[in-house]
Structure formats: C-alpha cells, structure tokens
Image 1: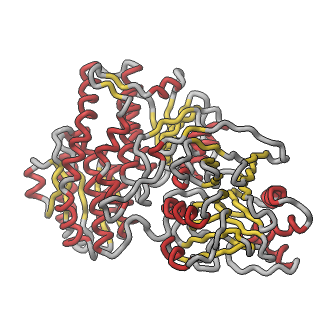
Image 2: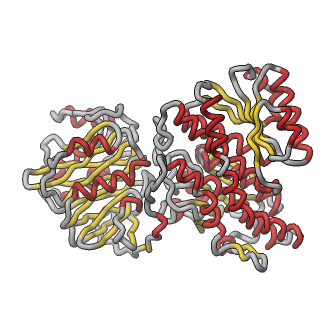
Length: 612
C-alpha cells in the first residue's frame, strides 16, 4: 500500500523524488522519506505526516545527489512516526531501503539480528532488510547479490528498493509475490523504478514490468534484470498511456470533488470506441475471449469494487441470462471454491494490485476457470495475470475514496451484460436498441445531477455535520448503491453509516431507527419496488425516524412524504443507479468538509491495498 520510487540519473534526485512522492501520496500518507547518495555517503530525511512535512525540512541537505530512493507509507508495523518512516538505514550506515509489503518472519529475523549485536531503531518489520543486506555486503556480495540473498530469507510478499554508498550510482529493486508492482522507466539519461506509473516523468513513453522473483539493477546509463538464480532476463517494454499519469488538481480544492465532477467525461471514456451509436452496436473486443461453454459467471472485488461487482452481477444475469454470483475477493481466496473450466471469474479492481483480488484470480486460475479483469490500471499485476482485461476508461483517480472508477466499473459491467446478451440472442432488437439509447443519454444526465451539488452541500452542512449514525436503504439495483453510499460516508466523513436492503428492515434494522439517526432511502421511479420502498418510508417515520429520500424529480408523493428529498432529473430508470451514486458521493464530500476532514486522504486508509 506504500509508494516507492528510485531515481538514478544526471539530474537532481531530490527534486525528482519529491515530485514523484507527491504523485504517489494517494498510496500512503502516514509518513514519507528520501535517502540519497552524495559525496558524504547516504543522507536520509524522513518525517511523519504528509509529503509536505518532508519538503519543509529538507533545506538543501542532499547536496548534488543524483541517486536516491523515496517512500510514502501506509503503516502496518509500527505507528506513523519519524523513526518508523522509510527509508531505513543499516547498522553501518552504508545501506538504505524502501519496502512495500509485510515480512511474515520478521520477529525471527529481528531476534537473530539482535543476537548478533545489531540494534534496531524502529518498530517496523522493514528495518531488518537494511541490516541483512549490509551483512551480506560485509561478506563480499555486491548490492544486487546481497539484496537477492536478503529477499530469499524473507517470508511473505515484498517489493524492495536498496542503495549502498559502496555502489553510489546504483539502485537495486526486487519483487517477491503480490506486494504491488515494480516498474522500470527509462528516459533522458535517467532510469526510474517505481510502484506505479504515476511516478514516471512525462518523457517515459514505455515501461518494463519487474515480475515475481526478479531483480533489477539500474544506473543512470543502464538497467539489468535478473532472475532468482542471477541469469539475465530480457523483457519487452509496454507502451505507457498518457491517461495513466496523475492529473493536476486545477481549480478544485480537492481531488475528490474534481473526480466527482469528471464523471460525465469519464463514462464517455468507458464508451469510447466500444459503442457505435449509428448501428447501434456494442463491441468490447475482449468479450470475444469468453468461453462459449459457460455455466456460471462469478464477480469478485473488495470495497467499492465489490459493490460495483454486485451491481454488475445483477445486470449481467438479467441481460445475458447466465447464472451470475458476486463474492468478496478475500472470501473467495480464503476457501476452496467449487470452480472449473466452465466458470468465468470477472475480477473488478481499480488499482489492479489489491492483494485479495490477486489471490482470488490465482485461485480461479488454479481451478481452471477463465479470468477477466475490469480495471482502471492497464499496467497492473491483475491485468497481466488475467486471460484478458477490460480498461474502464476512467483515467487516473487520485482521491482515496473512489468515485469515477465506481461509476465506470458499473457501466463497463452493464455494457458487458448487454453485449453478451445480444451476442447470445437473449435480447430482442427493440430492447437492445433501447438500452443503447439509454447509455448514450447517460453523460448528459450525469452532468445535470452533478449540477445540483449546492443543494447537497446545504444538506450536509445543515443536517449531517454532527450526525454520528446513518442508515441507507435500497432495494433491487439500488441496494448496491446504498452500500456504496454508506461506505463513502464511513471512509470520507467518518460517519458510522449502514447500507441495508430495505427487505431486511423487519429482520433487525428497525431496532436502529431513532430521531438522531437519519435514514436515506433510494426510491425507484416505477414498479413494485417503488411501492415497497414507500412502505419502508412509513416504517421509518412511524418509529420516529427522519427520512431523506432520493427519488425522481417529479415524484410528488415522495416529496410530500419524506422529510427532505434529493431529486433525480432523468426519466430513464436505467440511469438511477448511476445518478443516485452522485449525490451520495457529494454528501460524503461536503460532510467531510463540514467536519474538518480531508476527503482525499481518510485516516487509516490507502488507495491501493497490497497487503493481506
């Protein structure tokens, strides 16, 4: 979950590394640090808190260093303090490392090193790596050899960058398992190693992926990749798409608001090149790789991606008429599921590096199932593990609470269901055309919904600033939206929010209803579920609860019945799951601001979860 980057070049390492850390800060922001080599050996500066705290304390201390490593941390072992921040330095001061992952045998390694007379300065598991590399170098190993030997002694998943004053122009990186990516970029007399393409300079147009059990040694002029036994590995570069890079915040105060505001353009990115409006036709080429003999589709994800998968599973089953289930990826990976070659796993993952999702993919492949990944990251481990991957077209997302990637993931899954259903003759031409027309109209409807944010801001300030508990009720296609809306309030504004199926109210939820706990109710436009949701409003109000309804703008019955209403300005009920998501995102954002919370960087959370 941490961000790591190394630079070896002719330029100023400190300037490059600070810029890269700012671009990687979404991956961890408990602390940050830089270790660089100048004429006086290794200089290391690290601080608890944001990268800005590190910038304020450097004051030219790195001199003319042109080789260095940097790290932005999400704490696992040891609290976020200056001492526990990375990089960590060896007992002799000659080695510094940055580490992403968890060392499962760190207690044993610490005892062994302590017995040998080595003192630890931090509470982290990572510090042991620096000491181990230094010991191997004392025995005559090169930095590459020493880092490989240390890596072989670790249990668990790790990505490590190491530098040594004995080899002042070199950086070594190794990767063990799924502790995040390690990517090599080369441009303009420099070599860069990083955990994500967002750290790459604009001049880098292609990258090389370092795989499990591979090591790489870079200098400003050369990069060498080796396998576990030291044999040279020759690898092809992968072109780097411009939209994989971080974007500027522009006129916005926070990335979260910027990314909410980008959602109309984002969904157009999901449609681009895939929908021919004149035919009409959907063509997601990767779908042709789905096995013809298919008995079942399983969707899996974690957090927001799980809720997108839940929405997608309903659409795919309904449109394609294939039995479809949804799982938490971590739960799927923690058991031995009954899966085989007639099953398809669709793994939904914004980062493509989520540990639970990668292990679920590994489980499915071991069982002989086909694997599709729906992701925002074309250069991720999940993309390379899967049989095929579908880019959601959202571009870079920086704020930790996912917004546009949620809507785009849902839309891609919706389009997949339409294409599979049409290809297999499960939809009439009339229905298929109607659905395409609905998708075409979605960006405009999203823009109209985003334009109502001042009303949502007022509601957040007036009602939710001091709320401690909150219920969100949905049913059918709107149930996953209630779950996602509750998650946004939890992670963004620190409000204890429960997303619930309204069908469960009489089975326990009613016990939570009281005047101090508002209930947000998501109301469909038509049909039996609308009638059932109106009954839910009566149930809440009869028990003294306050109801905030999200419903069609012309639903005067709901407007009169609810205490407050957020209107949805679309006559197309297919739009409702997408459009109701937006005021829930805005409500979480403005509630966070009202409570003095940074919505881009929630406490205890990171954007990319690469540890179990």
